[in-house]
Amino acid sequence: MKPVIDYFLIPVMPVAAFIVTGLVLIALQCLNSAKLKPLIKLVALTGPVFAIGATWFLFKNAPLEYSRLQPGGHQAWLNEFIQSYLLDSTTLIWYWAIGALSFLSFVFIETYFKDKEELPEVMILLQFVSAAMMLLVSANSLLMVFMALELMSLPIYVLVGIEPNRHHGAEASLKYFLFGSFATVLLLFSIALIYSCTGSLHFNQISSFLLAPTGGNNPSGLMALTASALFIISVGFKLGLAPFHMWLPDAYEGASTPITGFMGSAVKLAAFGMAVRLWWGMLAPLSTHWISILGPLAVVTMFVGNLGALKQRNLKRLLAYSSISHAGYLILGLISISKTGSQLNTQNLFYYLVVYGFMFLGALGLISLIERSSGGTDISNIEGLGFSHPLLGLCLTLFVLSAAGIPPTAGFLGKYFLFSDAVRNGHTNLVIWAVLSSTVGIYYYLRVIIAVYMTESAGRSSLVIRDRSMVMVVLACALCMIFFAMFPHRLGI
Amino acid sequence: MNFPTSITYWSHFVTIAMFALGLLGFLLRRNAIVVLMCIELMLNAVNLFLIETSMRTNTPDGIILVVFVVTVAAAEVAVGLGIILNLYRLKGTVNLDHFKSLQG
Image 1 (cartoon, one colour):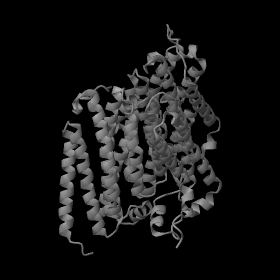
Image 2 (spheres, rainbow over the protein chains, first blue to last red):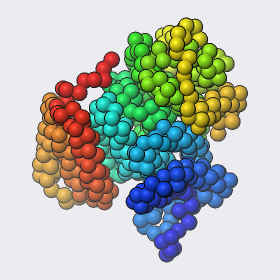
Image 3 (cartoon, each protein chain N blue to C red):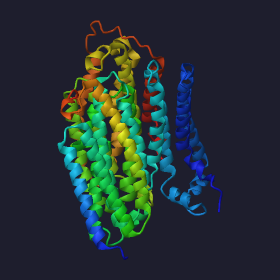
Image 4 (cartoon, chains in turn red, yellow):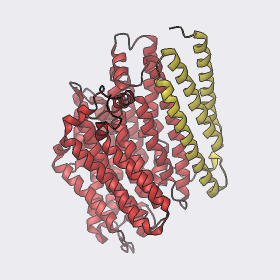
């Protein structure tokens, strides 16, 4: 019998970094002293920094650390935990991205909330959201999926409505809460159905049960099919797929701008990580069934997103609809993941997610700068930005071109990788629809560029940029985009 | 397996009835607090199903999950009531039909 404090704790360090930071912040907040505010701001950033450091450490000692998570040789409850936690090279790469996106978002959110009294609460909640995101992408059992998803969602419901004076915020958070908890109930119901027909919550045991020759055809197989349909609905709610996307534009518009940036970049990445784990880690034996539903759903999502964005004047809402259409492309990438041996080839999906995450965060950073100096997020607020602030205008152009998928940018490469993957896996007809819908999308992306460069800026050049660190975040995002475009394979596995 | 089938039958009946009632209430009722209660009703229906399955298949996983679900449901109610209270302070109503400022 080994001691309770086992070396198994080392592989969980990235998650623990966020949790410990969150607890320290709660302790500091309890002291309730105004002098501690700078300290809180500093401590809040140590969460992602230590998480990235721990991920780097695990990366250096990879085989040893993976072997610590082999079941056996531990106490019984540890074995149970270890079986529901997956750590491999793919997961570690996702950890990098979550750490980096969290760090940038934290800087951004801190700058936005620096004069507001909600700052400590926001930073505490964010630490737990980030920890849950890491648990989510390495979940290997349905219990872990449920807990991590709830730990991620509940703080976000609060964060959307945390500014008391933002009328839309409270309403958006109620809508998000109701839809989100309905999705949670459906997810739990499908978990119960899967459990009822397989007798287990662990992905490995479930997929080996479904692989058995009778798995897809007997009555319990029918139950598994029902469960996978419910998974599509509930995860579709979380990802913002088309018939279940109603909450997304409202939540993205109502939330404080940096929170929207966080939701659209890091949280989206983690949600797709969960979808990969659920569908390819657990339901892979039923893949023909759910691919036949997810394929058309992806096309509907792209069109709903792109057509919905056409008439938007509010930049946040426009980007929210564009985020729906990107979820469609990403689902196309999700269903065309292939396997070599037991390893999933998620690089292309991951590349697109990371590029999209930095793009979205950078664009929201810019919108937040504009909102703070001009008081609105309407498209008329950015008119003439290219003349008054050439560098910021250039950054916005880069983000928008990248979202549209215009060639020299990283967004184009991401789309190219995703679509070529899909063609290789025989989804050519879906790719044709995807290309058609991205042509629709170019219209509203170009409208942003026209506002930046080709509109007379009558009296609007008085844009005052007050927050240097927000500008730094935007520039960092733009530099990352350029880096990804030049060295796409640095992100490969 | 000597788990009585009548228990399976009746617990499935109660599960489906509770879940359906919760779903109907979620879709039809306009009061935010009642909608929140309907979500809890659905969660508890699933809990019942999990407990029954756990006893039928003789595995502990389901009952463990139920403990977590109850905890999460408590947290969810706390968050939900907080959000509803915040909105009530701002708008003076908890009727979902009155929350229409975000459209398009």
